[in-house]
Amino acid sequence: MNKLLCLFAGMLLGIAFLSACSKNDAKPLIVACEASSSPYCYYLSADAKPPVAGIDIDLVEEIAASLGRPVQYKVVPFQQIFTLVSMGKADIGAAGITITPQRAERVLFSTVYDVSSQVIVVPKNSAITDEATLKNARVAAQEGTTDLELLREHIKPRIVLPFLTQEDMNLALSDRRADAAVMDLMQAELLVKATGDDFRINQKPLTKDQYGLIFNKSNTELAETANAVIDQFKLSGKLQKSRERHLDELKSHPETGAKKASGEPVKPFVVCLDPSFAPFAFMDNNRLSGVDIEMAQAIADELKRPLHIHIVPFSEIIPLVMSGAADMGTSGISITPERAQSVLFSNPYEGSVRRILVRDESTIEKLADLEDKVIGAEKGTTNEDFAVNKLLAKETVHYDNATEGIIGLLKNEIDAYIDDESEADLAAGKYIGRIKMLNVAIPAEEYGFIFRQGNSEAKNAADKVIAAKRGTGDLQALFRKYISIYKTLDTNGI
Image (cartoon, rainbow, N blue to C red):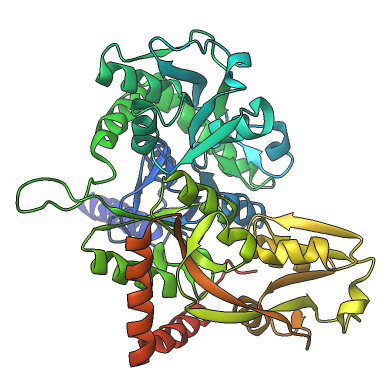
């Protein structure tokens, strides 16, 4: 009997040991997320564990716990979430993602875990009462939200003012730079509560959004597990508690900056950029990296202001700087006469030429061969303008970022992709045997940092930093450093 008990105990210990080992050795649940979707997903820091927080992150952690798997987060621009999930390079996509029929063609959505309305907020005595009366107004919305998408694509008011944070948008509404703002109902209620009777929420919502997590279309098993967890998350009251906790935490997020000796706050130096353009700006293991990141810090130091960086699509950088929502814009921005009419450029800090990427087996050899072909380019760039207006292509496909464009080339969506030489060279080196760079150089460009017209203080600080770093050789060393780092990265396993 004692022997049997000992044997049984040994079996239990062995099972427990194997269970512990299997849990510790479990394959990580890879989650792709964009970190400016408060309160669903917002950035903490690369050193935090996890680097992001929010309602979506609480939900993801519950799913991972039910599976006994650790979580690995990839913080990427919003559009790359869909790319990574659809390619099977991420298990889950999370960022307060609105469920739409168009997106459902590309990915598998979870069951709805939260619902919210988009509403109009105006000063109390405003004559704006509905969508029709927004047409002639200056209307604010937060960058990266469906609020901004709704304004630009459907309502189309006289002026759309994009802002990087909820706080910036609220301030614009308070000081009358904006006549109205479109925002999530939860955020609107917080604003009205905080300001007393200064503002009102129009009674009729513009739309209702349903939010879901996303999965690869073939990963139905994970989606079913997630759906069961979501149902329990809502029924147990955890969703409501998560919402309340993060809305409370966001009242002091992001930080307002350092303090002067007198106790008065120092205004942060706000920089917006798109981290999909190596070696200027890219993500290195959830950490913003690149030449532009170090240069932005040096310029902020010169101005003696704390640096705040916000991730946005490239096409939004100039509008955000023009509206005053950001102090500086960067991501290898080409200096052009047209852009110089809207923003103030620093002195050039780097130059480049355009290059054409094609698949390795392509017979395209020169620019003339691109006639009647399908060409890809990144939205909002001078490469896009060149492809549309200078090349005799049959069609131009407009991608949200360079990663999407290179994927499109590899997947035969396009015949060629036009890009800046630095990024094209890195891509050709990464995918030897799959894509190649044509031996054709298209007119040279110079890159600069951008500022709002009249912001000579920031421009002068940038010019001073550029001159100093070029004089010591540090600027050239930065490019060598980040080209080397980027070459070692697994760029989404394309």
